[in-house]
Length: 128
Image 1 (spheres, helix red, strand yellow):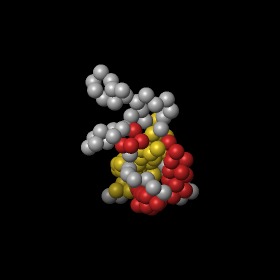
Image 2 (cartoon, one colour; image 1 turned 135 degrees about the vertical axis):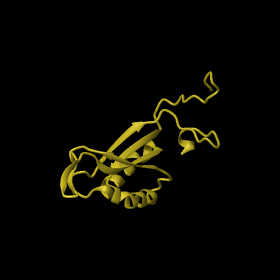
Image 3 (cartoon, one colour; image 1 turned 90 degrees about the vertical axis):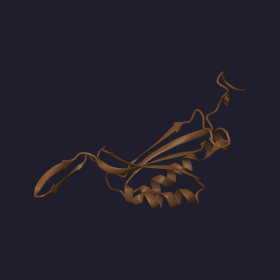
Image 4 (tube, helix red, strand yellow; image 1 turned 30 degrees about the vertical axis):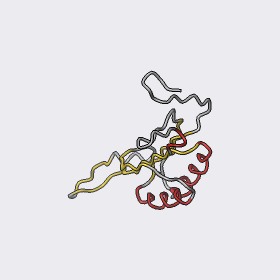
């Protein structure tokens, strides 16, 4: 079935596709990427970001003067997977990115209403 604009409608009652957003320390990126590839994750989007949480930044010295750095460099991963993979992906990121120190990051899991592969028009799970 298609909507008024000719786009396929998602009539599935259960959400079958999830978006995992994870913030991690930059030096952990390659290790996390390798671990996710090993469990079958086929793609992700990576963005260099700055943020703060419990870490609340730190102080540095530049040309003899101390100044506050309020935002800490992080890497944001965005991974869209079949709902059946979510627990394994979250566990893999958690175990691989963990240093045991403040600032290890956060992971959020959201429902994806629709996914479309632009090249083929495949939707939802088939688009992954």
